[in-house]
Amino acid sequence: MFVENSSENTGKDDAAQYESAKYNERSFSTLIRALRLSQGYFSFVLVHCNSLALRQQIVDRLQANSAQKPLQLILPKSATTLYTTIAAEVGSEKPPALMIIGLESVESIDRLLISTNLVCTEFSKKFSFPVVFWVTDELLRKIIRTAPDLYNRMTTIRFISH
Image (cartoon, rainbow, N blue to C red; front, top):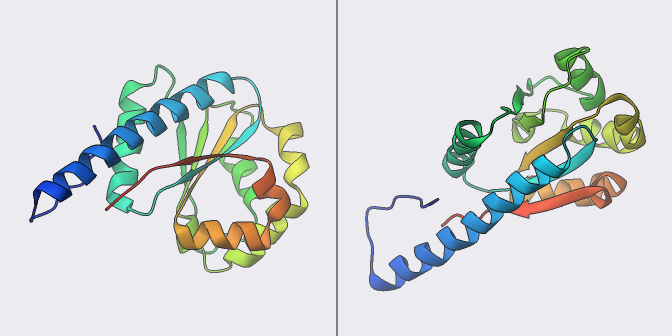
């Protein structure tokens, strides 16, 4: 189960952690199912998780439990376009899925999101695998505001952290 460690636990905290862990297990199952159903097809999957530690735990478990390991793309801070960055990373390879990590660190995030929003229909023409965006609350709000067409094409899965 996905549980974040804390130094102080009360009975109320334990119950909240248990509920969060149950919720996160369902979210993990949904993520696995979304990736499995998208094999050979393009889709945008948005995974909303505020804790970098929990995100890493999920990514590690996903890598350990998947027959076909998703490719991880850690975006450089200087990235300005997502489409060309992905195309350069995968080349002619067709990974089972591509996880985009580090969006929160991109210096020109507005520019990257606007350019992605403008070409979001092109993704399905070039890529035949799901693209998974890992985002925090702040980045989710920015996507909704800056790239509404992109957001409307996404399947959203949420993980809860304390």
